[in-house]
Length: 500
Image (cartoon, rainbow, N blue to C red; front, side, top):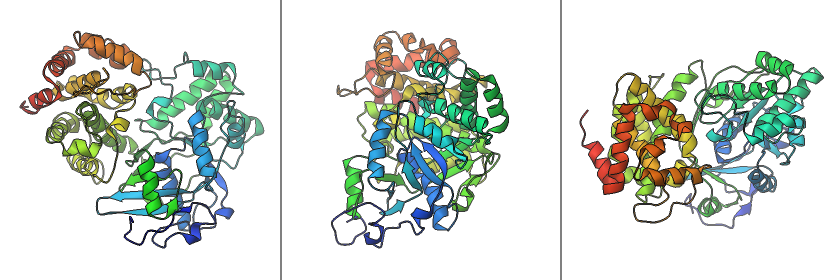
């Protein structure tokens, strides 16, 4: 058993079963029946339950924030699957911390309900319109914000957004539902709630503000002005490596004596840095370890550039070389040297220091976290949605380096590796299954780029002006041709051998 005690039959997770769990397992000490809702969270995936829900749970364990309980919500069909699982276990979640020195388990109880997932989002809208809800938070992934890559604003031409503009009272997106709920609150004389993005986007609050205000503007200019003036959209930086859940994770929870249909595994590290800009109050998350600061942008730039871009440095090459997990990538001698060189020579120079961390020290921390072989964080999961992650995480660094005539050979190689991966086969000939919302289009471009690398850079929705910048495009062309002619490891070693 994971904690070293005798194996016992797993107990189905529920409120009534909490007292029967093994004593080694932390569980809610607060009376969940007395909690009242204050937060609606849209997108109740693993990350939310291991991160934001955990911080709130820890406050509740200290007798605080009893009126800030979470109501879960979702707008996608898969959210209904999660809803059914969580409602069957009273919205409790088992968190299993994966430390190389040993695992431990904790049951989190800060969520008290999960709303029905409906096409018109009627229940979600009514719930958010209730004056008791003071924060509406989201984890809908980096690619879920309907951002126009050309303008950085709302993509008004997207069919989902077009639907919400035509049907503002029965919207299909989370953002349409937020606008509809804010409209009801305005009409009722209530103040707005705080809209809180918890996704890995630099300036996530600013992005959320642009999306919500632009969508409101399309149907009700007075509402848009009211939201712009009175609502709050704090920026935040979130950080915790949380793998996907599968049979192994369910079995791991069972080793602790818990039958949980949706347990969450996570690393032994968390960080949450939040701008203290809330319009209707907030929990004292800082008493559970969060950081409130006006320097969120510096923290998030360090994390997004070193960790998130670093994930892309590893994942595409790792997928091509058949490395199953990020820890496997870090254990691969060539990949780990490649990672270190790109970080120290091409990423760190464009990252500012934050209190407690220099960029170089943060690279050391990230290397340790990535190398944690207790975390089965798959290379495939990290490589998912490259069409959002490369423009969001990698290309801004490349642009910054080009502006100061800095080195970009390694970042250019990262882009060439993404192009090679999107062709859909590994170096051993095995198939890479679809792993991007735009996979079919990417695969066509990648196939053409085998003999004409410029065909990949012609995807202006990602590269924009970079396709014409010789300092990048020439490197990219040479790397992609070398990868196809001699292989990934030859290209990686050629880069590693370069002196700066």
